[in-house]
Image (cartoon, rainbow over all chains, first blue to last red; front, side, top):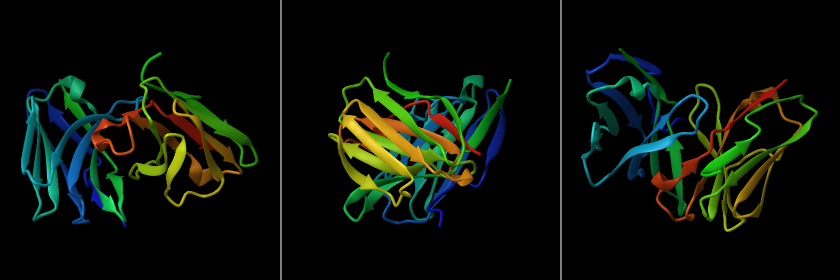
Amino acid sequence: DQQVKQNSPSLSVQEGRISILNCDYTNSMFDYFLWYKKYPAEGPTFLISISSIKDKNEDGRFTVFLNKSAKHLSLHIVPSQPGDSAVYFCAASGLDFGNEKLTFGTGTRLTIIP
Amino acid sequence: ETGVTQTPRHLVMGMTNKKSLKCEQHLGHNAMYWYKQSAKKPLELMFVYSLEERVENNSVPSRFSPECPNSSHLFLHLHTLQPEDSALYLCASSQDRLAGVDTQYFGPGTRLTVL
């Protein structure tokens, strides 16, 4: 049973426009959420995170929104740039029998069209 | 070299072969991790080592055998693998086991194909 879901495997956005990547989760014990960015042939790199006590966190062009009641988070990138083309993974963290566990989604491939 | 390195970057092996994946971190971290990234599936945590001691094993089959001889090196020994084990294997490290999850540094991965 997939606890973190990214239902869109791919997304194409025009350069300069807003990119919105979505993520849904099912486990209410998750209390910390992260977005990772992955280029081909490289490992994932941390992008931005949000704690469950917040509903928004902003870092430059990147903003993450959290809707706890809907168990939904989204990553907004504005304005989108060609270098943003990558695979974006949503991840959720929470305690599982005393151990902190990190659960990833399947990723969304974002392509920015010049 | 800096950061987290992994060798080999690509590996093709038969089901009866024995091979090892190597990970090395040059960050002075005390915790290291093995992840598996299969196509169209979420990234899965396989093993966690803290100060060279295995602290987590997420129901991984015994055909995967990790080894952490020191805090800078992590190996994943492979034997009698199955075709469904073909995936990208990622190594990561963090300052310590209790560090925030956003402080894990990933290597580039080893693309494994089992024939």
